[in-house]
Length: 442
Image (cartoon, rainbow, N blue to C red; front, side):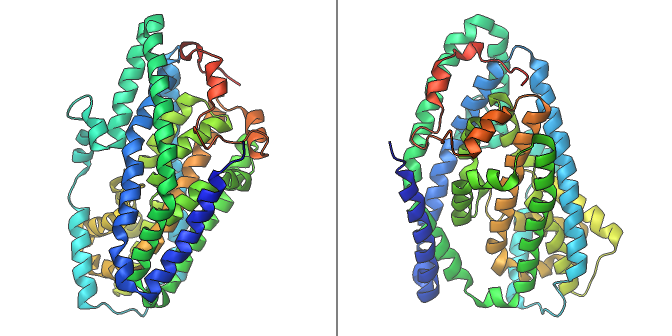
């Protein structure tokens, strides 16, 4: 059967172009279309918690030893910390080299915008974040849409089913059917993508206009170039050396997800599809279930680069450049403070303002200079975060012996196409009961 979804993503491209035209020609109309984009992203977010829950429970519940799950999680967190540090270093180097904030002037309107973002960024502390990982009830994680809360509940349920042994097999089978249903619903929602993309892009262009892009082109171009540098020169060689997988083949395989992120400015909109596609690629379910959701909160390569360059930009624009020691201490604080911000549009700007408010209050007003273009920079943030999480999943799978490289070669070559209708490899799953699908070394 021919893949009809190719028309869907062609429609998304046309919708993005139409949104840009509407935003430029009739800015007020473009602004009024924002609820279309907001509604689509909300529909996607509605599906994230059940997908993460089913994926992790099926993966962890099928594993014979809990130590394997702990090894995957520990390795993933260590890798995320290392990559965030590398991204931080690259951002520092390029930011100091470009000095993009020189010559700009701060207006009263920009100061007011900065104060608003600082208020958002200072609303929670690290302790609040850690306590917030624990849901109010066992099911509230699903109703509140908190990824880390869902992750915690799913791990607990998965370990409980693991301890039940054969008695837990019927429950695992039931959750497998629920997962199939959830992915079917997601596939239906995806047909609303063109409408959501049209509304989101029209609203952004209508609100920002082209003048903001002209005046702040240096920081934008520098940021996009730095993200490409990181993906191409850091993630690409690492992926090839460790897994012998070509980066550009992997990114082409995820092309529809990148288009979805580009049109919604949120990497979270592609999270469910990334889980499905990484499993289809040949990474084991437990590795995907643990690495992808955790990466969305802790593997923030694009956000690290953004916070670095934006901080240097603000310091330079306000005539208060930072010493190297101040740069490193402030930015390390921001990386810690930015946990969980990867999928939320605009969260990077609030984190930037909140970090400056805590360490250098005199620089907060400068955040107003980039408020106008932050949405466009959030595109690169989201795309880089997504690429980083895709690469991380393959790397963690390889290091733990849970990646079928031969399967990946077939998938990337187009010999084993992804099922866009179900988002699942149903034929393969039905050949083996979930209780017998344990992680085995490749």
